[in-house]
Length: 388
Image (cartoon, rainbow, N blue to C red):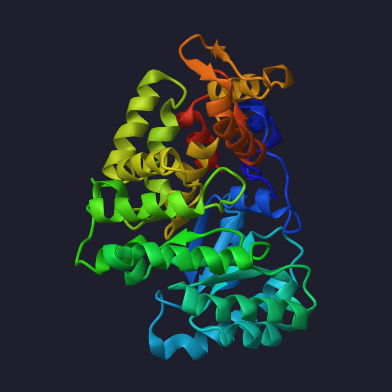
C-alpha cells in the first residue's frame, strides 16, 4: 500500500518532491499508526461489503473499520457477524491489495469468536476497534485481542481503543479516567496502534451537535477533552500514542458532483476559486478547517463515515515543501548542539531544540504521505486524488 498509490506514477512524479513510501500490514507500528489516514467506517451489515472494500481501495483508502457497534441496531448483530465471515472469505480469495481492515466490536467475547469463525481469512484482518474504552473495560478487550492473535497464529492483531465515555468527558472524573486509560494502554503498548476519539458521544452527553459551520474545536467542552487526551496520551517524549481526529458527520453528495469544477482548470487561479466554492457548497469547508485544527492540536488521521471525506484528509496530510525544508534543516546532524537560524524560505525562525519534536513528527508524516513539490498545493493534490 501507499498513499496516492491509486493515481498514476506519472501524476505522482509531477506532484511530489518525495513520493509516499510503500508499507504493508507487517510494517513497524509507528509507520502504520501514522499511515492510517482517513479511516473509513462501514456498517458490517452491508451485503456487498467485500465489493465496497475493493472499490474504496481503488479510490485511495488505506484503512477501514467494519462496524458491529453503534452503526447497526442491536437486533442486527448476529446477522452482521455472519455477513463479516462471508465477506472476509470472499476477500481472502482475492489477490487485490486491500486496506488495513479492522472490526469494531461490542464486547471482548466477540473478538476470539470472530477470529475463530473467520478461519484462514482472518489473515486479512489488521485488528479490532474497542469502543467506550476505560481502564475497567480495557484490560478484558486487550486480553481478548492477544488471545485471539495467539489462537489464530497471527503475527500481530492491533487494537485501537475509542475514548468516548462520560467519565472522560466529565470534569470531576476526567483526571482519574485519563490516568486509568494511560495505565492500561501502556501495559499493552505493543498492541495499541492508535487511540480514537468518540466526539459524537461526547456531544451526546450534553445534547449537543455541531453544525456544518463549526469544528469540534468550536465546542468548548469537546475541545477541552481533546486537549487533555493529547496532554496525557500523545506526548512527544517517546511515551505518547497516535491520537486520530474526530469524525466529520456531514456530507451532501458524492465526489462526482463537484468534479465538474475540478475539470475546468484546477491548476489555475479561477480553478482554485471554483473548487473552494464547490467544497463550501458540499459541506466540506468545515471539514477542511477541522483537519487543519486536528494537526495543529496534535492529532493525525481522521475517522470518516463518507468516502467523499477521504481525499481531502489525505491531501491535507501531505507535507508541504516548506515544512519539509524546515524539518530537514532542524534535524541536520550539525545542528545537534541547538541554536536558532532563519528558515530556508526566509519567513520564520527555526529553533533547533524546541522545534526538534515537531520536525521528527513532520518527517514521519513525510515518509507516509509524501512531500509536495514547491509549486504544488492542496488543490492540486485534491484534484489528482479525485480524478481517478
